[in-house]
Image 1 (cartoon, one colour):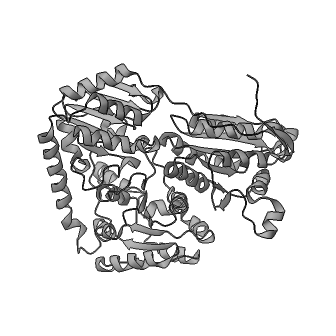
Image 2 (spheres, rainbow, N blue to C red):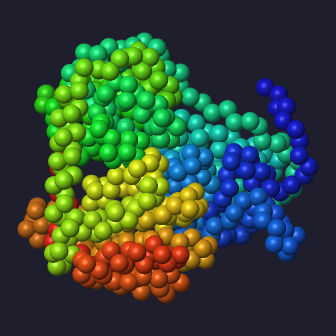
Image 3 (cartoon, rainbow, N blue to C red):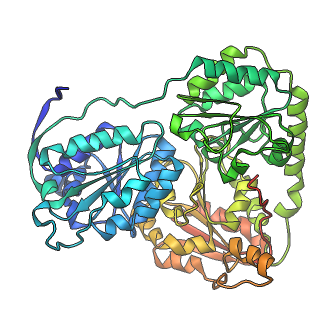
Length: 555
């Protein structure tokens, strides 16, 4: 096929790449400085004349202290805005430092483009600084990983990367450019309009699912993050309101139904999964978080609806399935099911159980125990959260309590590491949240273990004037491992941490904070944090002997 795009005057690869990114709606480049990628910075700020005059360039540059933070921030940008995030790292260790974050984005289905520097083509094989072939390292955890060897092709490659990253099923795309190629000016083709792929829904699949719903007496709907990523939240709400099917919401689908919606039964998930006679899972894999798709005994039939065929569960027999645009799937089901299903008694029973579970939280949320019960932190935090607050969890045991108690009022306002479970996401996610929602509260919930991965990037929050409220549940150890090991062996090792004053670390980096040891002091500390206008860490010393109660089934 002949390329009919207009030709631009000669420019280095940085200009080509930045033009392509801006064409796709990107506003921020997350990075850690390296000479291999200087042309990207030159283009992002608009060149020397723009810097001298103070004229903003086409992209905001946010530089960080560790490459994985840059990629975490780009990933969260893709999650929050549904526009692929953009990160750039230098060659060699710059790229390898980013791999864990890329892997998390791969498992999460988060759209992002990572551009890596690379040793020069002209010196390849002679031992240049940081010379390593990156694409084979990134290929298993990206939709595509490639090297650009043509100075005129940088923009075209980045343009294609953004289109691929944002196409179903979304995910990371990696492109690296040798240093001599990136610095070399060349005439190049302009970006083209975005043509993202989407699987076509089969009407027979929709009809089959509708028939199963008609027959069910106790159907249940599970909404996952891809419902948000697909822009299907309104269609999902329309389906729920039209049919009366009760809902459990996971990931970024939390908030599609507000906490007081009569069909939201997330807090009754155990009873719902045990008694359902049909479970419809939309926009999330049937992985360990959902008991691998086995609900009840005998197991209930399962319907799986995803955005692309490759996401369909292959490890169990599905009663029905469909792949394609999730919003279209919900609306097609509404047309097939014009009247509410006769299941109101089932929905009411589940909602009553959910409300009872929420009411049962009151004792722990108001606990006066000393040492502090971790639930008390959430008892103080939740009344202080605005409707549009963005809440970020980065940790194990402490953040598990957040998943139980914190129910967002809007979709796309909850972030956690996802099923890959890579800790250290927090500061990068917080950067993205503050940029995406500049007028909203941004709250980062950190376990003290997770804090050790990336707390240094509070420095980046300070330098870029990105205020965030950070709450550390400091139980002086890896509680997610400590208690299971005690259960298995009667003792624990390699699970203890110091009672570190993480607030003093934040102060040293230019932020503010305080340590809390009494439950009555938590609320006033949070008020000071929200009022501070800086990165502010509330370091709450919690009881290490209280562990989040877990099921061994994943349900």
